Length: 530
Ligand code: NAD
Image (cartoon, rainbow, N blue to C red; front, side, top):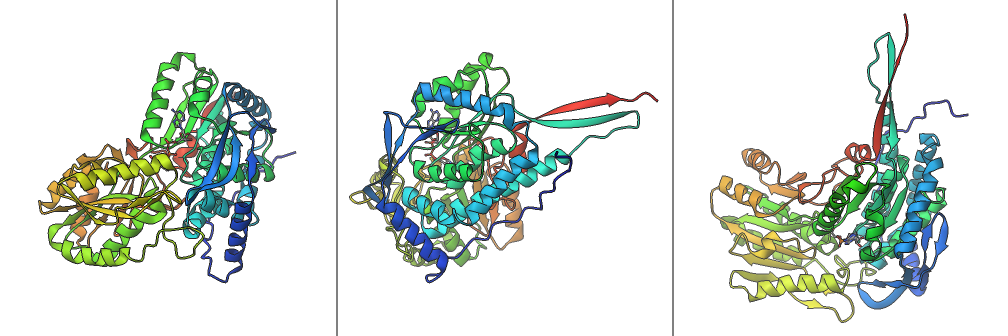
C-alpha cells in the first residue's frame, strides 16, 4: 500500500568530472572508447520490450574516422511505427496508474546509473558517434543527462503538491493527468542528454512514448535506451524506433491518439511538423501539444568598454566548442571598429590553441562535423565567403573529408551586416564578424532585426548602462541572454534553456514550463453540507 507523500530532495547538479590524465575515470573512459571501437554491433528497434531487426538498415560511423563502422541499425517502416504506437497505448494502461513516486524512482535510478556504471559507456559512445571531446561529452552525456532526470523528478513533486484553495464548505483538488494518447519524441544528433530527455520527460509524467532518434546519433542513443531498461522502465513505456522520417511520418501524424510532439532539431523540420499537425487537426482526439526547441543564429555584441580578453575567450569557446554544432553556438559577432585591431590580435593568438583532430587525443579542442551533408553545407558557406567581395576569411577556411568530416575553425570578416553567414544558421565551426561604427542603439536594433531566431546572445561590456540597454533592446532576441560570457553552456536548474521566435516554443527543457506541457490538470470540487 502506498499512502505516503514521498519527498524528492531539492535538485543538485551532477558534478562534472575533470578527467585528469592519470585519473581512474580518464583511463576507464579511454578503455571503453577502445573497446567500443573494436566491436561492430547490431542495433534493433525495441517495441513493447521486443527487439526487432528489420530489412532496412542504417550504419553508425565515426565522424572523425568516417570509414569505420561502429554499428548497423534496423530502421522502422510504417508497420513498425504502427506497432510502436499500439505498444505505447497498451503500456499506458498500467503506467499512468502506478504511483508517481514509483515512476520518479526509475528515472532517479537511471541518473544514478548514468553517474556511475553507465558514465563511461554514455561518454565513450558520444565521443565515437558524435565526435565530442571528453570535456564536451562529460558535460552532455553524463552530467546533463543526470540533471534532466533528477530535476524532472523534483519538478513533478512540486507540481503535484500545488493544490487550489478550499473554503470550509467544499474541498478542491487538482489531478495532473498525463496526456490522453501517445507522445512522439524526435531527437537531434548533437546532444545525447537532450535525446534522453525528449523521451524521458513525458514518460516520468505518466505518458508513453514513441521515440525516433536521429540517424546520426543512434549509437549513443542506444546506450540511453539500455540505461532506461536497466533502470527498470517497463516494456512499451518508451519505444525505440530509428527510422527515415518519410517512412513513418504519415502513420504517426495521422493517428488520432497523437497527444504531443517533443522535438529538438532544425526550424525547417519543426515547421513541417507544425504544418502537418495543423492539416490533420480534425483527426485528433485532443489538441496535440507541440513542444519544439529549434535553431539559432546567436549573437555576441561587444561594447567599446568590453574586456577584450574575456571577449576573445567568449568568441573562441562560444563559436568553436563541439565544432559549433550547438544550437546556442556564437555565430555572428558585432565589434566596435576601434577595438578590433587589439581584439583581433588576442583572438588569433587564442585560436592557435584550438587543435582540430581525433577526439581520442587529449589535447583535441574540436573534432569532425557529423556527416557528409553537414560537411558539404558548411563548406558551401565558406566557399560563398571566399567568393564574395564583401567577406574575407581571416582564420581557417579549409575543409578536408579524406579521413573524417573536418572543417577548420573559420572566422569570416564581413562589411555587410546582412551577409548570408550573418543571417543563416550554419551549424558548424564558422564565426562571422561585423565591425561597427554606428551609434550603439542603432547597432542593437540591427542585431535584433537581422535573424529570424531568438535563442541565445551575449553582451560584453564593462559599462553598466551599455549592458542594461542591450538587455532592453534585445529583450526578444534571445531566450538565454549572457553578460560577459559566451552564449553557450546552459546548465539545468541554473539557466533554463530555450528561445522564442523561430528558435522554438521556449518551453525550457528540464524546467517547470516543459514538465507542465506533459500534464493535463483536472480540477475536482466536492461540496459538504453544513
Ligand atoms: P534535424 O531537424 O535535421 O533533425 C532532428 C530530428 O528530426 C532527427 O531525428 C531527424 O531525423 C528528424 N526529422 C527530420 N525531418 C523530419 C520530418 N520531416 N519529420 C519528422 N522528423 C524529421 O536537426 P539536427 O541536424 O539533428 O540537429 C540540428 C538542429 O537542431 C539545429 O538547427 C540546432 O539549432 C537544433 N537544436 C536546437 C536545440 C535547442 O534547444 N533549441 C538543441 C539542439 C539542437
